[in-house]
Image 1 (cartoon, rainbow, N blue to C red):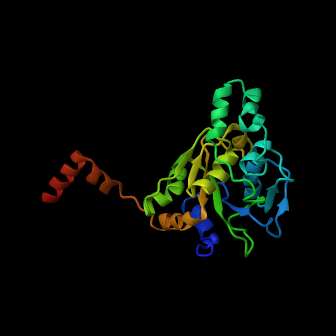
Image 2: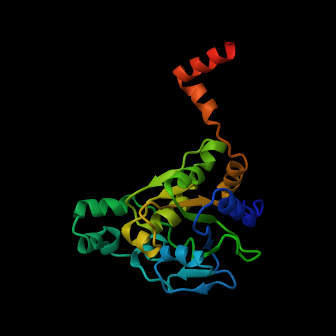
Image 3: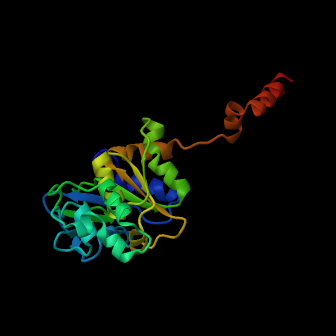
Length: 247
């Protein structure tokens, strides 16, 4: 769908009309290698969001990556031992996790199938080189904008977004949209929030390519009539409005 949605226009709508404070980021699932002009970075996978917000075109892969958990959820370490797959690292590093809950966390988290991608690339949404496919865009926003942007498909075709809380950020914002084919809003985990420097009132939204046009349509048609809304859903207000019209 990125070929039918102008990414610069989409970015302009998000920034100028919806006034998102942080730069939207374009994500590419690289199946045959990273795009030309993107530099490798040795960081945690979720950290590519903030790096791209700062104007960089970057990618991580199995050799340029600094998180075992991210490698597992991106399908680059399918043979990971139970220290990762059963969440044992969670109980080692965080005293509030029970072993049972940690194992349940990993079982319920999304992961890309092994070998589906060999790199994950990110760039500012308004600075994607010509010819590079964009599979996803990610924004860090406040809850109200998250509701609107992640909910774009719900008001255009009726598909509710997926809400994620508890899973690792790399699972929620990269793997979940791929596996579900749906828009995602996610709180993110402690590490994902820290590496992307989210404020307490911010969260992630991740929108798959097929929903890009719905975000455009939502913003282009964005209108709310509070008086009409009260009239049509509030019996007391509706009665007052009808009486006023009769007079």
